[in-house]
Amino acid sequence: MMSSQLGQDHFVLAVLNGKRDGYFLDSGAADGVRSSNTLLLESAYGWRGICIEPNDRYFQALQRNRQCLCIHGCLYDREGEVEFLEGANMLGGILQEYTPAMLRYTQHVFGPDLAAVRKRTRTIASVLYECSAPPVIDYWSLDTEGSELAILKSFPFDDYRLRVLTVEHNRQPVRKDIRQFLEARSFRHIHDFGIDDCYLGPDAHVPQSEPYAAWRSSARHRR
View (cartoon, rainbow, N blue to C red):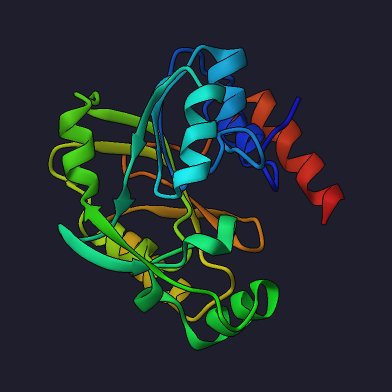
């Protein structure tokens, strides 16, 4: 069983040696099923966690589809209001964070008259504190269509430890900045999913387990 777009869920399980009862953070969870990086963890491995989704329609489906805490909110590096491309569905994000190339692509897919709506933003720290998240987050899936670096920079690293992190970059120039920011905090880049990069936190180690070796072998064959 795999629900994620590119196999991120099996990657996480391989890195964490099939961990059960872990804790996840899913930012940009959509309906919680389609291309979900955390559904398998919750449904088959007993993980708990938080799913966050700004799109109104997707959030309604998310609440129906998942058992974890579901937060209806638009993450950013500060509280306030932003223009959000709600009509872009799973490509929807904060308008000012789109690169010109990503905005052109989104308008090509959904039409040049794609309208933005006003959304209230909140920080990832406020969500974690509100939900009484544990001090160790085993996996964070960060996919917010352009605002990933801003959100990363606002993460309360002094209060929470991340073990595994996947960050979408869509092959945009910000990918380099994301990597530099994380490596300066002792995260290690461990795998490239094409549009996502995968990192291990400072306290996590590259596993030598059989599940991880098997995953690496299958990943090489898929390339």
